[in-house]
Image (cartoon, rainbow, N blue to C red; front, side):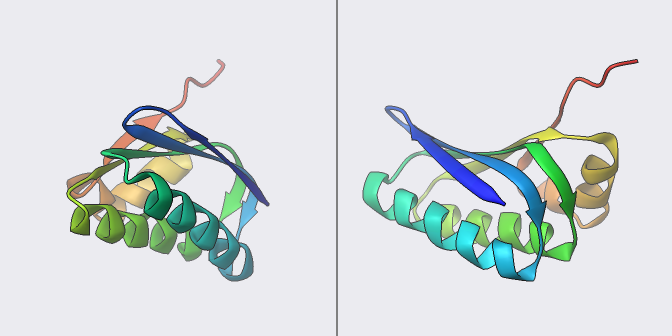
Length: 107
């Protein structure tokens, strides 16, 4: 698992790749939070398009970043979700807290 963070004027984007589990989520969380603390963006985009597997740790990762950004007056958008991850995040109620976007799937 790796995370690459790109920052713009008022947006930070975290590009995730690989698998997210309990151990990797802690590393990703620390990297994203560090970037947020340095930049104070208005929007955090978490791009899941490179994620091949996630368990409930992925939901916890998003929820924790939502709480962190909300405390700073910001918002979170999760992009690149495949149909399965999108459905799981909606079932967890994240669609009521953050913007969720599916990735284009090939037919």
